[in-house]
Image (cartoon, rainbow, N blue to C red; front, side):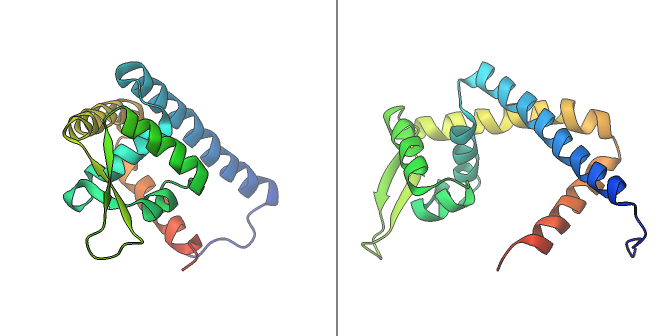
Length: 152
């Protein structure tokens, strides 16, 4: 489908505002329930989910920081808190001395699995129920926007 070049300026700006407002309201609700149920802050939740979905439940720390959109210093603070809570550990790469992996501990794997299950249950209620059949189209549209606007 070709975009209509005659779309009114106010209309397209309003559409984008609705995307942002819908995302923020939904993310706030999700993160609020995750914090209430599991005591996880948003950045910790994000890191645990990324690790539980990664091979061997580990990832290079620099890559994890980038994917989580955290600065080096911000990521270090979150990682230190996760280490102190026995959710992750730092593992030196056997192949490259410059690389350190963040890896889930056994406790971290258990918490990450609980977080993933809780998030799925919450998202079914706050995303799938209101959107119904449109949920897949929303995911496809957001994937398209990510790919179109990601610097490679």
